[in-house]
Image (cartoon, rainbow, N blue to C red; front, side):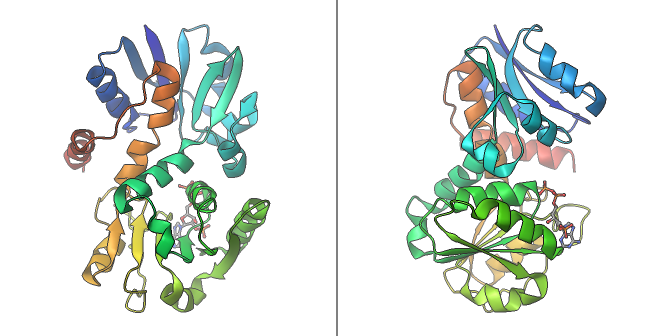
Length: 282
Ligand code: ATR
């Protein structure tokens, strides 16, 4: 039997076991995927010992993603760009780390908008400059758009992000001050919220979308609630919207493939299962 885990602190609320459990059942695989609560002081020991406990690898979540980044022996290019690792596996005895949020966000955009959506997109606006923003920018900068603006309440964090990700970027990366948003929005064909604003219990993200391009797409990575105030405002303006749940589902795909050897599908049934769980725990 192949065993995988999600490790975090706390870990009770992780939905990853539901996602991987669904796929294990769906594909009739002899495997398990379990939650493991490990405090930060013990995380280094956990990384050394999970192999001897029979695990093939697993997911890493808050607060261990940066520590995992520093501790793995090899990293994928995506992990390198983001500076955080959320997926671990062993290959030829070597501990590898990936950041599958990058591929997860892009796969979700492609699935939602249809491949080739970038053809109409020259300018992208990303709001936020945390770990999630890095994953989103790292994915978008490999697509044929012209420029990506990164706006953040704390401008210095946007500057750090742009400095780190600009190296080797085929796309121009620029910062935008939060106060400058009204001047950027009219040019942005894709707007992505990666901040925690709009999440249940947080204030909403209020943007004036009245001057956004008519064909603009507004995406949110927040998925509780599924329709954030930002997405509701975008829909009210007649703009296309992309919700945050798909990124959660798609980021799980590469890990499952590594540990269990099958590329799983993100199906409407899986989406409905996770949505029902979100509703049940609100
Ligand atoms: P993650 O790893 O999920 O991206 P994070 O690193 O804590 O989480 O980043 C949270 C993001 O939400 C940051 O960009 C943060 O802005 P600051 O860098 O200025 O803190 C943003 N954010 C959180 N609360 C906010 C608020 N009230 N207004 C504007 N931005 C906010």
